[in-house]
Length: 298
Length: 341
Image 1 (cartoon, chains in turn orange, red):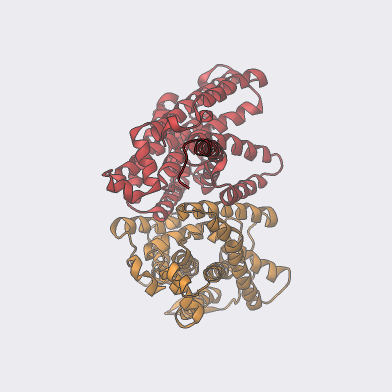
Image 2 (image 1 turned 90 degrees about the vertical axis):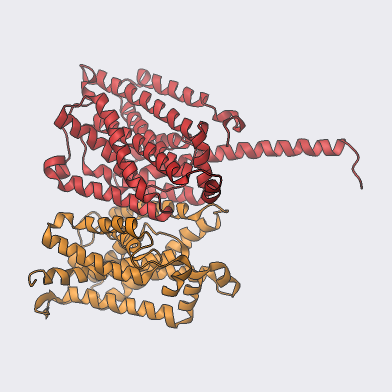
């Protein structure tokens, strides 16, 4: 039991990163019914922001993280402004899901190769926030990994508080529940969509910026996080951010215990295997609710 | 959408003309030309693109599994060649059949679910297959892939002749596959049901069609052709590695169909030849820019030209006919019977 504990702790760290990715995805799906295939590229871009700010502008870590988060919000908002809104307004009654999937798939390819053209294919890294090692339940854990959990927890708590206690958050929840009624009550849909995409982008960029010193950043780094994020949102129930959070921790721990029991090569399959099982047994997700109740949990 | 209501430009004779052009190209440019090489790959991608169109364009179920199914076909051909000494023809059929069984296997759970779930589950399939091929080194050769299996180079004695033979084999199989898919999609009884599912699934179901099995059937058939395309790719290129199960293959194929026009099969063919030629010629500029371009083209077409080339053509011809029809109706009512004031 004692030798599996470190793996569980590492799994929770991993789960923290997945949560930042998956909760954003789930929120965007809940509000706009859009699955953003380019979400992973926003994460990679966040990592590059961090790398550039720390390496070339020699900023300290925390201001660089804050700026990367702002940058991520900008990227998310830009994706909505430049792509999603124009495509949505040209839909003319066709089923929208198809269009946005294809559209963001194009964006994902574009951003991935674009980053490769600009930054090259090299693996980039920055110095860790802190080099200290702490002991948690008798398990030594690097401070920079603990910080990931801390930042993820803070940001997620802030997000859920924002959704529950502010007027903007109320507007987002209202739109997730019923866009037509929300609009007729005077909520500006475009603004809600823009903020939602901005928040999604910011969360992804935070994940990217926080993990630069552990996983490094390269143009295709985000993709695997994005597809695991999709799997996690399905495990947790599409459009249910709290479910996504729980599923992230579950998948993170499942992955690192797989490394313990099998080997690290098979780690990347865990999320998909769990997802397939969930889809077969409980298609609405582990924590999924009916569509009518979904908005209560946003 | 019956065939006889379609404008003349869409009848098969244009496809036949296109095939005639393809047939004489190697005689003009010479069998060792780079153009022949590109056209072989275009034809292989045309099968793959059309197979994606058959499930996603016709039934509206977005599949991201086609990179994986393509890879299944390619690995089946290559591995059966290495381990069983499977001849080329058996490998092409086998690639299709194994991919179709995978299609059935994914389709049964995934197609019970609606759009987004299917897209993600099928994306996961491509990734799972890639991971397995990457890590099962003893079986699949791992990251270096499989090589040294019977391929199209054995079709003739000299390299030049076998390239030419490969070209005609691929083009003929492409023509057969495309016509078969077009027949299923537009001329068979089930094709109408598939289009009805895309337009209004609940209404189609209320008419008594077992929607689920139509979708699974379309997906399985589509997987079969994707597998055939994969096997042809394996035999032509001579190396199969996990790279072909990566998502950029899906992005490329989706771009082809969206550019050409979804839900027509012809659109997939048009898109495959145009997009792959663009992709290949941009390689001379820089290997990264061709994918930047694929992404950019995909986004621009989806936003500004969602019908695609073929779809846009059909639409503008229909609009033209509608206008003529309205004009003649207006003439009749002006010159005809007195209407009450």
